[in-house]
Image (cartoon, rainbow, N blue to C red; front, side):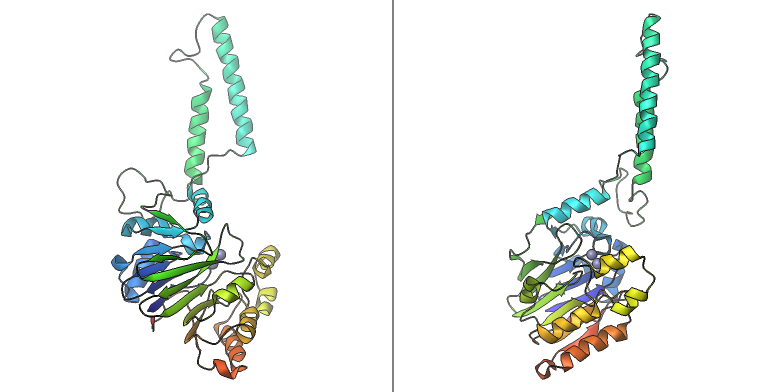
Amino acid sequence: MRMTVLASGSKGNSTVIASARTRLLVDAGLSCRELLKRMKLASEDPAALDAILITHEHQDHIAGLAVLARRLRIPVFITEPTHRAWVRMVTPRTTMTYAQWLDHVQCEKAARAVAQAATELGSSANEPGAPGLAPETWESSATDLHAAADPNAADPDEDDTPAAKPDPSFLPSIEYFHSGANFSIGDISITPFTIPHDAADPCGFVFESRSEAIRMAIATDLGYMPPNVKAALKRIDVLLLESNHDLDMLRDGPYPWAVKQRVLSRVGHLSNHATAEFLARDYDGGATWIVLGHLSEANNAPELALIAAEQAIQGRMTLLGSRILLAQQSAPLTPICL
Ligand SMILES: [Zn+2]
Ligand SMILES: [Zn+2]
């Protein structure tokens, strides 16, 4: 079984999990073009992917999803709340601001007055050339709004599309799963588990290759380690675990206070300290590799994350078999094969 971390961090996350027969991409948080480039660098064949799995709808996990899924024509496994939240995100908004609504009301009022005056004069406001056609005024302003709010209006990756712009939320095939309910893709058995994070229905995954009896897990984007996550991360051979920030660097760092509060909250991200605490107290020591991931570029230093995790493990002699790696934001990690 193989884990290839293509990218990890707040600018994009994506990991390949592969058995002898099945290849899965977990999250697609870079552009389609960049994901294809990273796969090539890591000698992962995109055409051999069987499915994409999504942990949650934050941009750093889903940015390249639609384009990649359409390009590869493979199914997307996602929870229904996450899918709904993502569709809302990518669907152009047509709602008005209050000022635009006031304008709209004024236009309608003026149109009604003109229509009434025309009727009184014995003509019809519906005749061609009648002034004050409010609905058209409204439609054109709505169209402008629509264009301005469309985040996908100039997606440079969408170079294989026909002339008509596709629905930005279109996916060739969608499969819903539920956290806690095991399912299979090819010969990989997957157990999604709920994680505490500020998204619609976020989850981590445990992957088990039935033929190879190897278990791998991904647990990033979680504010703390609840009992269900600790239970899910037992008997794992390769563990991609979040070690997001150094508490002091975050407190003294450049983020606005509200963002600091969000990161530190119970639905934010795991600090080096929280990860070390998990490794020292609850981790069963079974993993051959622990990959520390989702490191903050602004509020962490790779050495700090590594030292915290190593010290946690060194405190327990039974855990010396676990080796620690650092996942990177800007380049894929060498594939980890067991
Ligand atoms: Zn993230
Ligand atoms: Zn997130």
